[in-house]
Structure formats: structure tokens, C-alpha cells
Image (cartoon, rainbow, N blue to C red):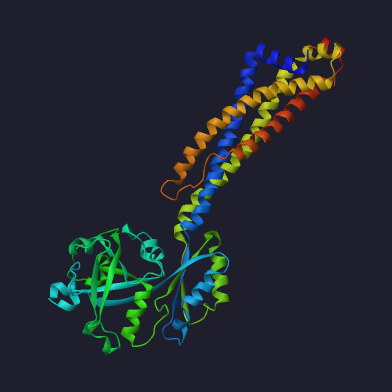
Length: 429
């Protein structure tokens, strides 16, 4: 009878012991595979967070230092973004202008009966409004339409309150006018009218109530976000000269927020932002508050994996050692019958392989469902876990490593018997 037949016969005959060994293998594999799956999931989520919740720093020019603001233009910003670990940038500008035909959330000027002030809104220009601080920090959320992009012209984002009070929808237009109190330094711009098309509508996180002590342009509901091209045209008119820089600062977003401090220092030194001409504000809290718990999960699952591997080795060895002790006489009979030690060892390996293969398949099926559910729970509310599918690769690697452990355990337990002679084995208790 060959080794395969003897292995199958033994597994079939010793059902209780085979079931016990199967359960030990299955539980050990399931624990390790699930822990590895959760660890990989947390690493994937953390990697996604590094971009989706990118930290950023804002470079603000000192307007009293000659040339500082003019230097902060698109040419320089694009050069900075090309450096290592930079994701993108958003330039900012702010001005105030009257909207004669638009009803705003009322405030101080409405209460005082000042018509011009009651229609004055705050215009905020953005290179990419998705990365404008108010939106990025979730103070405002775009609920309709699309965000502003660098090449947009004549586009605007307005609040749900402003859209509701004025019957505006996506694609509709509205106008602003240069009035006496908001004409800038160029008298020739007085009376200029500018038209904007509604590209998106945003919701204010905490909607304001009418306040007679607060100016209309200070209400977030009265904020109007416009594209940077339109802003430059308007501000050039108000100043009476060409304007193409970011006087209100630029937000630079970092690709890998784990290297935030390092990237900030390198950028500041390389582009001379560490001078009196600029102030740098930094914000990496959004990434840190979300990535920290996931990194701790990765650390804890790493410890759990090591503990389960050690326990698995110890438990498997003890079970196989006790199993082998019960089979001493069987081994002695095989040796006395002329069956070689290699064949006997091969039979033991085949027995373990049969049980291990079934337990690995069962553990893999359970892990695919379990770690996926846990992974989605971990990712909920933070980021989508793109491309997670249970990853057969790591399951196979875990199964292969587990079989090496089984092989070692069988080998060590077999050595305790094989060193004895057939006569000594058969005469032992």
C-alpha cells in the first residue's frame, strides 16, 4: 500500500483526531488571514487618505514687501507642484462688489436702510474651488453642479440660500456692478457690469440667521466663488492695470501627508518662502485625525499576526507530538515491515496536507467575506476603498507560510519517534 492510500485510510479512520487537527489549522489560518487582510485594508485606506485628506500649507505674501505678492503667480505655483510630494495648489483672491438685482441674506446694511451695502457681496476667487479652504474643510459642501477649474471663465458658485431667494438654478446668470464704495483705485471702472453663470450651488454647514449687527458680505450664504480668470479681469479693471498674482495667498496640497513637515521645510527653503516676504500657515489635522486610528489598527494587527503565528506553531506541535506518541507502535510496525523512514514521513506530510488544504480553502472563503466587511467598516465615512477584493495573493502567501509551519511541526514531532529503533518503539509504553 503506498503512502497516499495509507494517508487517506488513516484520515478516514481517525475522524475525531482528524477533525481536531482540521479545526486547529482552520482557526489558526482564519485568524492570521483575517488579521493580514485587515492590516492590508488599513494600509490601503491610509494610503488613500494621504491624497484624499491631503494636508496643506498656505503661503501668504506680505503686501508691504516689494515684489512678494507679484512673485506668487501661476508660473511659480506650477513649478512648486512639479516638485516631489506635491499634489496640487489653489490660489485665492478676495474682493467686494454690489449685486443690485440680487437679494442677499439681510444684515447690518439692510437694517440701516443702506441700499448699496445691502447688496454688497464677498467674491472669493479660486483656481480650483474643490481645494478652496471653505470647501476642503467641509464648511461648505457642493450639492449641485460642478467645482470651478483653472480654465473656467465667467463661472460662479452660489449658496442654496442665495439660489432659493433669487430663483437661480445651474446655468442661470446674474450680474454685479462696480459702485462708488466698491470701485477700487480706478475711477474709470465705476459702472462696469460683470456677468456670471451659475456652475454650482453649495450648502453652508451651519446656516446663518439674519443679524442686524453683521454686514451682509460676512454671511457665508452671501459668498460668491468665481473662477480665477474672471477674477483677474475684474481686479485688473479695479486697479487700472494688469493683475496676475495671488495677493491673498496660495494653498499647496501635499501628496503624502505623513511627510508633511519634511516637504514644507524643503519647499520653503527651495523657493525662499522662509523670508520676511511671506507667512506660512499649515494644516495637516484632517489627515492626522483620520490616519492615526488606522495606523494604530495596522500596528495592533501586526502584533496579533505574530502572536497567532507563534501560538499556531506551539499548538500544532503539541497536537502532532501527542498524536505521534499515540502512533509509536504504528511507526514501529511500518519500520519493521521494511517501510523506509522517508516513506513514513511522506505519509505523515500527506495526512497533514489533506487536512491543511481543506482548512486553507475554508479559511480563505471565510476571510474573503470577513475582512472585506471589517475593511468597509473601517473605511466608512473616510474614503472609498477602491479595488479591495479580498486579495487572493496574500491568502495564498499566508497559506504557503502556514504549510511550512505544518511541515516543521510534523518534522519535529516525527524526529522524536524516528530516532528510536523499531524494537525500542514496539517495546515502549
